[in-house]
Image (tube, rainbow, N blue to C red):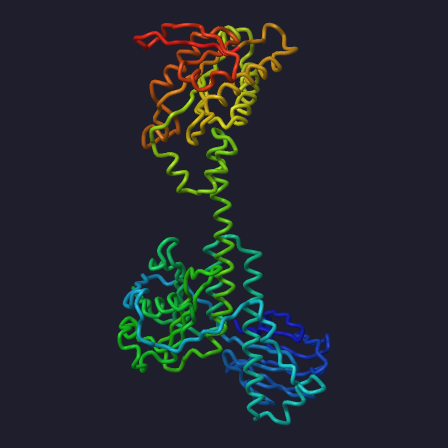
Length: 555
């Protein structure tokens, strides 16, 4: 389906499909395509569909109709002809030009190492292009006092005119691409699909045979990762593989400038780039993608046709697209970072305090992986258990028991997190918490005791006003010692936890505690002595221990 890409005098861009047998163009609202420009006649031109193609006719307009620099009365339009009507630029596209996914494999071959100085092989363009500079490409201000195309009719063969029209053509393409990219950004949320759509736009405005979007590795820029590989829509025959030249890519990454060769097959400086010769590449462009002060990849276009040589204008256009694509990749990277942080937060927030989670998020996945790796640590373990829960459950309906347990665990967990404790697990009607893993502090034992005392206070507030048959008490045991902390379990189910004799002792202290009593071991006492009101209980025999354990009570 043929169409026109229209850039009007106010910089607006639109696409107009040539569906009708006749399409009228002019300033009057009666026309099919209305151009609100005083330099356009009311009935300016007409496009007629014929057996040979689309015929453009000037309808006796005052300022005339131009096709590729020349004034015309009638002209059979060809693909990518540039039509100028008044101050409006129309690009005629007779066939679809979007790229199609390449079905074969892409091989990156040849080329010098990034650290080595390659021979100068292609013309380099060091000028930079930013999408924000697109206003500099707009219609020249030197249009004459009338601001119309009338001034061009008198000197249509002048070099200034040709330069002006070339600028307008490039402007039309740049503005169209920037508009389309902006539109795609607002309508497509899948990163891969978005990059594919942008590469399709590249094929709309630049006639390439093949196009590659290649990103560098996060840690190693010598690692090259093909992300999008496209071939021309009407490319005949499918190739099983393509070779992209590392020589060009490495040069672009090393020097940070865009590269252009208009005919690689005859360029003696490309003899060592065998991949270009093998692919019979006649012309190539490669532009870097910048993310702040770092190159994150390249866009490379190739053509194998003798009649298709890339120009400096194509290079500048691809640089504009590259700037926009780099912004897309940057935003996608930020979005992925946000999603990754959310995944980590959702994974950890049930068991770790906000402070610990924030510490992990700062370090990212590497910090999380390191934290999960089992390692020796010194930690303070806290066990809390509801006293007489079995009899409580017998007196109450299961639904009410569940509601009370949820309320209890919610209150206790909030307190644990307040003191930077880690919730290891819920155990029936009890819980296990750790202070000192994954983040060890000097005052782990002190914070564990403060949490235990506040847990007792919170339970009292919870029980206030509750019917006697529904009230309950808790026991708490605390012990400090050497543990192994990290992901422990089977390949099918891994949980972050701590194991060791210190853990077992804390559990035994909780089991011998009286209702609403906090007991702790000797090492914990040594770390908090003088900071709390504590009384010695004396040595006690606990299950699993040959020797008696010295026990202390927190008052």
